[in-house]
Length: 298
Image (cartoon, rainbow, N blue to C red):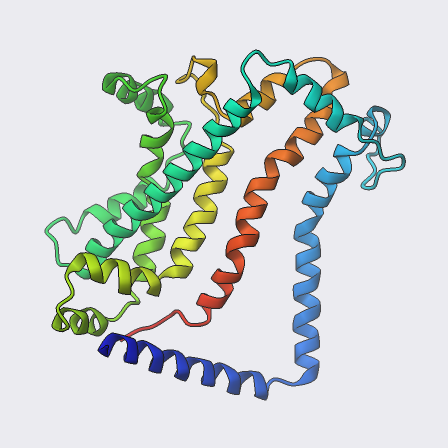
């Protein structure tokens, strides 16, 4: 009860302060800010629009020089060709789709839980491994390609090559996720945690019902980054069974061929972009809403 009252009081103060700041801003300032943000939004949307335009271009317009941004004679044959090639696969296309959805769901949820639990213990408890977090920050400097051979040796030693674990296990430990979650969890005041302890809550309850809702912008942002990275992941040299490969592998194999498949390749790229865009649309409102009430400090 103490925690709920404190959180509600803090949010009321924050919203009232934000309201006062909006009232002091002039109409001209609002117009300038809206114009700049709209221009930035249009500029960032150009690559997406260009990819959609390419998926409807006939083969002769795809190789024009200089290239055109818009399409002169839109066609849908690129998508029909893509679906025709997909239907000729000896492994059902639904199998690739299931693999991608299963791996993305399990890995994204696991990455959020592991990164959040590790960040909670590092930010709210005094431990003897104070050197661990600087080591995590240093690991952000390494490119994944550099770690390819050592990672393959470890995975082969564990005996998980050519299994689903080769996708899931390496992606659970995210240095970026731990760094992001720790920075947000340090903003959660210890007064909330101590009040919950007085009310009889254990650390598991505090973590799930107090800390995680307080850092909702962080793990929603991590969800976006994790899903996008895992959805675009390929098997590389660790998966040999065709029935275990992911959707990007299937589409890349279908479209690797003659120049006539360039239009189908553009259509396949658009289809691969749809799930990350849907995840962003479903979560961005929550990110914006909770960002306004974050930043709680002691």
